[in-house]
Length: 561
Ligand SMILES: Cc1ncc(C[n+]2csc(CCOP(=O)(O)OP(=O)(O)O)c2C)c(N)n1
Image (cartoon, rainbow, N blue to C red; front, side, top):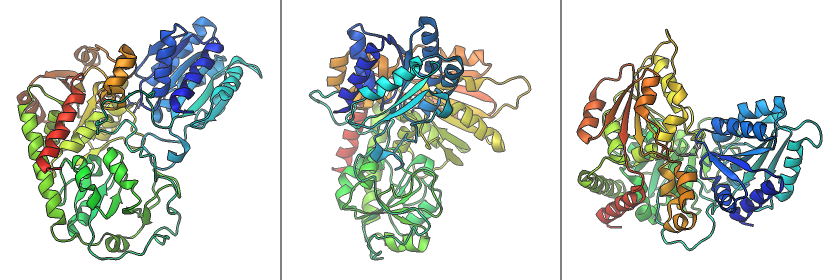
């Protein structure tokens, strides 16, 4: 049974149980449920209510259950999105309200591997639910739902909340003739290459003495991948061995003579030539990197000087190496011309990108990412979704902010303003945050500051495309999907809004400025970050998919791949 069939059985079970209201918060892993709900709503079986913030969605469902005297359901994607439901679930527990949580999850083979937005979320609500069931991917969810819904109604005691955790395997979109498969960005899911991510070597005390082939030490066409938290060691390492460095922005390793600009668009062409990969930190941003790490024909090593928190023992395919000596031997020095070829391709890609951006009439996320990176000398925090991926594409290796932060543990769009505020307060260092509008709105409450509270020096740059732009770049933006599901795609994934960010900021007593041109943006970014200021840049969401396709084409043409 594929994910769409499974999701349709979920909505059928809801209908049988007399549930007429479902609150949905947007996400990609929960897409099968979103499409099934859209179908059910079209048949008139239920009403969907869309809320961007899962905490809001949870309480809305609680209220629907209270007001209707019937169970109500709430749907979320994976990761912190599920955790955001906890307060509503707690209330439902103590007030005996039948609240049905439908949380989407990765399939078992991706759990514990460090796959993006993946955590142990089955049973997350502990003592606060009457039942928690974990439905494996590909399994008929009906019996699980029947049990959970009965518990929710109180067959064995008081009514109350239940969690039905549903694992969905790709594809997440109902099957239909595909006309457009070239979207190269990753989903919210980030790294979710479906193969080769399980098994692997032990992360236990004997790591580094694994069963992988002994290092040859000979020159090899090795690349260094620096994921989140890699640190500057990755840059020094790559430079020392003359190896190309593919560094995500929050690696804090994106500097030096080994950095390769726009690397994710080069991997397709260079991929077949790569023999080895050395990974520092945790890469989460792009499918091309995930695909590289899933390749069994490439020797892969992960540098783990200490026990990492982002994957479970034995769940990574790479060889785990704990000492630098061994890592140096594994990597080998880059053969003649290897780094140069990458650097030249990177430079051509960057030039092509700049040319395209110069000719683009309106500001895009890539313009903003470029300007933000170039103009930030102090701390920079990058929100999940497109902003961090835009910076990953644009950031030059010739400049680096003081420290780059991103919540990549679970890549939630929640809490970003608050996190950045905390970072700014920690050492009194001015901090700039780049986020999408939904990420901003999710944590608008983070703007509230009581009298006498220390104010952080925090500038929030909001890329306001009036909804979730990333979904249009994924399979949900494919013309065939849009054609079949019509306005439901925009409503359930795009989640449009017309929130007035200027008024919102004013309400919290925070300064706001609307930016319309590149010159205005540069000027605003050049000013010192003091107190709190929201810089709003409005961008177009409808044309984003086409724009990214043009970007990819331009880069591939420039590098001759
Ligand atoms: C707490 C949480 N809820 C939901 C998601 C799923 N999600 C990932 S990106 C995204 C949309 C973000 O929109 P926005 O901040 O406007 O950025 P854009 O996609 O436009 O770049 C959503 C809902 C998530 N990662 N975290």
